[in-house]
Amino acid sequence: MTFTQAAAGLVGERRRLRFTVLVLAAFVLAMLLLFHQTVASLIDIWSRSQTFAHGFLVMPISIWLIWREKEAYFLLAVRPQPYALILVVLFGAMWLLAHMVDVLVLEQLAFVAILVSGIWAVIGNAMAARAAFPLLFLFLAVPMGSELIPPLMDLTATTTEYLVRASGVPLYREGMYLYLPTGTWSVIAECSGVRYLIASFTLGLIYAYLTYRSLKRRLLFVIASILVPIAANSLRAYGVVMMGHLSDMRLGVGVDHLVYGWGFFGLVMIILFWVGGFWQEDSAPDCNAEAGTVSGRDAAPISFVVVAGIALISAAVWPLTTAWTLERDASTGPMQPLSLPQPDGTWRQMDGIDDFWHPDVTGADREIDQFYSAEQPVALFLRQFVTQVQGAELVASAEPWRPEPRQLWRVVAQQRVALDLASLGAVEEVQMRYRGTKYLVWSWYHIAGRNVANPYVAKFLEAQQKLLQGRRTGTRIFVATPIHEEAIGDARSLLEVFTVAQLSPIASSLRQGLPSQ
Image (cartoon, rainbow, N blue to C red):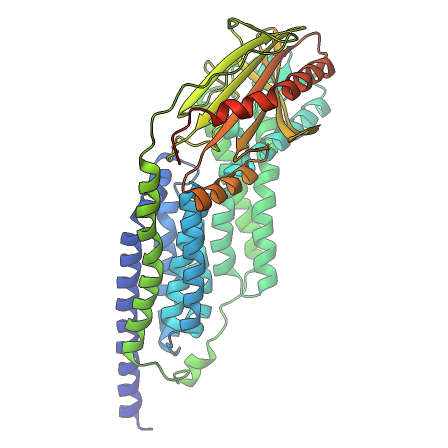
């Protein structure tokens, strides 16, 4: 092969690669338009949450990671992979199911998976393998990690308690509240360290990809980028508490609390990257680049257009399907107010009690609050959802335990308790304190005639109901009673007797007065 022929071949390969890039750009733009609601939900969360603001940078970083190795892509054959279209269909079905039951994070994950699978189908195995990390990095645009907040809060409170006690400072802990002689500290969601963890994990992935070549070193550094911020957050919380205690609550309780936190996190990350730099590996030489040959023969340009078109059609089916499924939810007939039958002789209805706990649940179509009395007051709260939209859902991420003013109501314990009460096998149990009174609250979901406490099972039942009946109807049920003299066992026994007596009347009441299906 002469120099002129080689140069002409290289120019031809570059033109075909540019054509592929144009097809990909058109495909990505079309996908963003097709799933504009999901894209809008991503942008909305990025713009209002400091925890997930990095989402704006994910796609530019992915593009840059590919661009920095553009010469290597010129040496790879571009052959569409139609088999990857199967994944487009599967993830499209997942997107539709998540969209139907308002599981936003799953919907967003499915959208990114559709996008990545479609790109794989267009560019083929060789280029997709080369761009594997930048493509998979796109999943970090999805706001994930909120479910880590409760366990990280508990870990932070536990480690802070241990370290403060080890420092010789007396401390009393009740749930997420730490009582010291100089003041009270509460571990809230912002103290969980999830922001530090997400930021460290994202930066750690990029650093490991750019700094190391071996999979082992990359994995070890990513693991370190997860463990180090968790440990550092516990030290940060301990430092804040001790700073406030030693200064008689003059330091570490205002803006300096935030400044100290982010400053400490920045120092920890600098140390982590500095230590990681000792094991830096040079970039591996590209054997194909040295040989100056193209690794195979590209497919015909028309094949890129055909595969991209099929991928678009396979993806477009799902958002178009939502038009008629949402229309079936749009209209409901008149609904009668909820009513409960008169209780038996053991339980008598009574008027509402001032300052008694109420669930902080919004968006319910029907609701009722009823108070009863036997040995002591017991409250029953029903929140029924017949029409559900984003932000007004039965299974929501917002906790219902702390109505305003939040500083007066304190969750001191929370767990899932197994029961054996006919159709009720478990409840979410919460102990709350309001001023000098402590309350025991049980909560569960009633969906399609079943009582469940697990929110994931509740979402599954909603999806099943939506597919079979075209509508999601469900109720969140709360029962609550005061705890006297820390006698938690007596309060549990009272709620158990009351729940057994009311399960059947509750189910009958929820079925009555609903619009026709």
